[in-house]
Length: 340
Length: 243
Image (cartoon, rainbow over all chains, first blue to last red; front, side, top):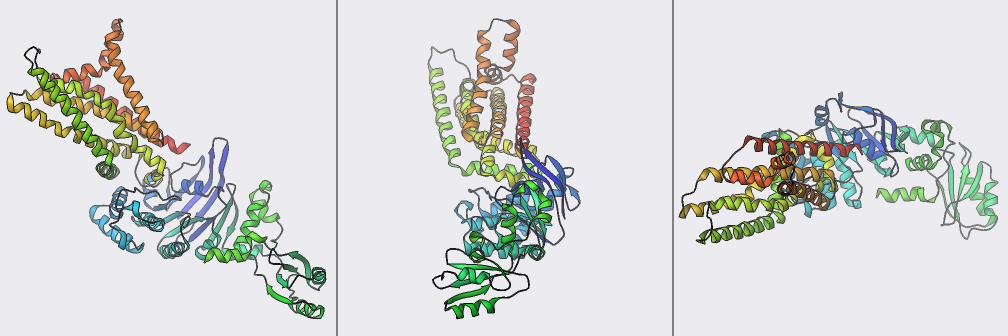
């Protein structure tokens, strides 16, 4: 539905996006992932026709965005990063204005507003003045305007940014619901969002695509050695060395402030039993022992976007060593918290 | 056409929903009222040379447009640039020209609305004296033409910057230059220059029109000037994309 080919955008000497090509297939939810300043918003603005690219082409539903902008834009619904509405208007007035701007007739406008209000659950606030709405509701109004003209493609730029956890959950549900009827391109820097919503992921950093695939395929590709997490009471001296010498254990690392150790193991090995026996025979109190999950998307993301990019985009995919267990800030405990 | 109409309706609504509009309407009426009363008072003086009161009314009130122009237009595009609502606006299937046209027509409508109550002054005169309606209609035409040009200049300034204050200052400066050209006409000695300045002197134009003379050169001047600045405004808006 969207074909972006070799998009490049320069601001003066600064290259914000260089040579990004991506395609979103019909009915798919494509997630665009990247740290802040990676070029996500610039890419999205080029795809929606707000910014002309320095070079490259975009087609939406087979129509070139620059040769036939009207036809292409009609198939696009866009929710920008900062949803900016006219605060003095009422919700239904605003929707009416947007529908007319999209070229809907009076009758079409009425039914389009009814549908959008219902789908975005705006029924209770439709006569309210936009300036008095909470951020979550404004986001919904933004989504409602994006779907008003029933576009085939929806482009959402960081749709959950700045919302509270409850609002985030409801907006995500709404997005998932919209994904059943529209092709979706979604940008975010929140990883669980991608794992929850997207069929396919593109990771962008410093204006280039550095990885692409389904969340599963990325995870498979980047999963490193299995590892165990161990906590011994009072962290007895010599324990780390003893654990490191167990068969199947490659290395022992400090697992963070909770006094845990991370045991990196050989692929296919499971030294949990050995750890237990060692602890018992040495008289250590084993507080925790568990397997670390394989790499999450977050690990992959952190690994990819913090590595030296000088080597260049695609080369990194091939050349980079497999993932190590993540450092504390990228730990999976944090991941869980973001989700809830 | 949809784009123009939708923008027009929204902007018109925005005008009538903003307190600024009513404050402006209030002061506009106060000032025109004071001017009107003063003119009528002077003409009642047996020593005054006399003449149709509405002629003096137009030649005095048009100066207020130097202030009204910036105030009416400063918000129009700047606000969208600052708040970011320009992004959803320009990704809709509308062109920059349509957006500018819609905004301009809304401003012009509101501007005409400001003048509407002054018809009452003409009505009052008509109660006491026979009014020659030709010059009155021509006077209103003049006010409308000057207003259109000023508003177009204002929209152009507004499309140049995200700051409303800057837009207002730029409009005021441009209008002031235009105003000064008329003043300079009186001052220069060079014949060619005098004629050139006379062509763009708003003083002359409003004077002529208030006397009932509708010169097509004036129509061409104002209409082409208005279109020129509207064109510049749409280009300025388009240019925003490239930076």
